[in-house]
Length: 95
Image (cartoon, rainbow, N blue to C red; front, side):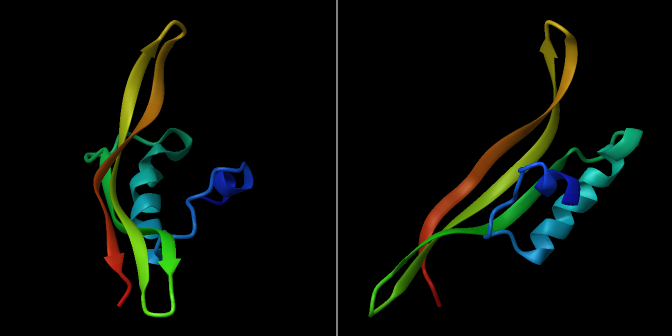
């Protein structure tokens, strides 16, 4: 994960520690030639995005996201890819 961040691939400020750990755990078998994981999907719930604040209230945009390892056919052969699916996006009042 540090190598990804060092190469400009960040997760954004809305990722909680629990979500980061789940994502890192899902990636472990894929790093440095490990075997394919039994479950190729990870779900990240309640990623915090944009905030809108006023004197009276604050609202936050939240996203639930599913990431899945996929294999794509390309002219040079199969390529690993990550499929990203937004499961639910919503505005909620910050509590």
